[in-house]
Length: 154
Length: 194
Image (cartoon, rainbow over all chains, first blue to last red; front, side, top):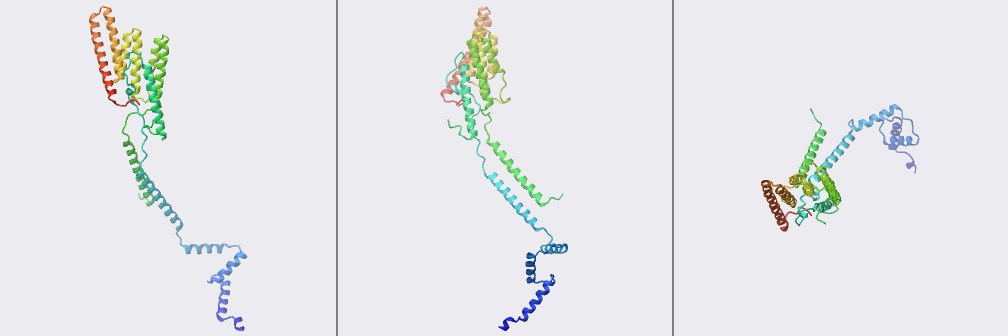
């Protein structure tokens, strides 16, 4: 029981090392760092200018001087843009445009008249027939453009 | 000049995209083969105007106002035509028929010279062998027949003989055109209407 209460030489050396590390922060000691962190969390001190500069300097010197994050972002966005452009090209080259709808075109009205014209008169009746036929064509063209139906569907 | 690699890549990409777009435009253009105009609102507006004027002429003619009827038809001739520089067979045929009717009205008013002018104008709009051309030739033949009678009554025998020969020529040509059209219709010729 007595042996268990007496510190070993190793424990005494570690204890000495910890005390020195707590007194001198420049000395490397994970236990001292942990104790200081606990102390700072429980009772934070005002950060003086020297300590702040030292911390920033230390951090930058460990990471190096080049801002690597910017490079990574540019590479990622550049690759994304190239992929998008490639996809657009593939889509545009490979995707056939939908065919334009077949539309009624201007043409002779001759076939509206199966019978020979009267010797005199009849012009008024003929323009009636022409106007009505082309009005139907125009309606069909509207429907075809709207994609409602084909011209063949009448 | 030294371009950055990024700028060079953007330029190359832009050129590639431009090329693709041009190729697509060319492909779309080459797909269009029919040059005739599409039946559109402007064409219908003209046809509607012509129809209304013909019916206006009907009303005036029935009321004995032949000059007013002729004036209503003249407004069709004078009306602005849709898509200047573009030919619409429908408009040409409506104009040809309108001139034929104006000629008939003038003939009924015993003005053979005015009737002849209208027919000649109408024939400019009916160069194809259609009923419209045949009808104009027929009206022209009737005008010449009327003039022949007038010249004969006036004792101008030589002129009457010449005009009679012209009338016969026109009426025979009218028959030829009508027979050709009838033959096409019976053969199920070109489907110009609906």
